[in-house]
Image 1 (cartoon, rainbow, N blue to C red):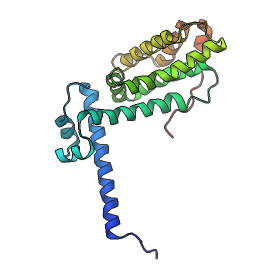
Image 2 (tube, rainbow, N blue to C red):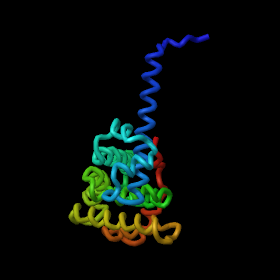
Image 3 (cartoon, rainbow, N blue to C red):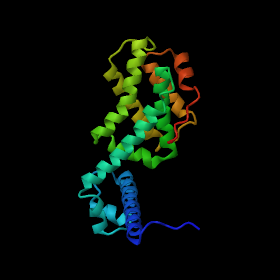
Length: 216
């Protein structure tokens, strides 16, 4: 029979750490729910405390201000975007296909998880780090596509603005309006056409099999 080498004090410390982690996770989850429903400006700390069903002291054990809580949420969202649009797409060699894959993924993700989409819509324009993460993949893909001749010469930042605007409006649409099953592919096709690909090539590129973008 194995004998535990941990002391009561160590077990208490470990239990305390686990409780703190659970409380922090509950606060983050509650804040995401509230922000998704009401936006960034209206909620106050008491709203997050009430939704998480924790004490005021528990909140201040983890976050000194609302801004600190928002920073934690935005960091979580930024890391999610970086994983989805940067790491998992690196196996795709064609930059135009990589761009289409990113657009399709964010639309599919929004359809499957409207709360995530609402969080993105609320936070992206107001948190610079999230906006930068959101633009990084398309900027790289467009620059590579233009540099390799896959897309015609154009100003990369203007092209990124075009892609971001179209993608965000697509996210708004799929969480509020009926859209066809292949809407993500249609949107990606239109974006590639707007960037200069021929219609047939844009459609074929935007409908290639998606890689596994699940979080590992």
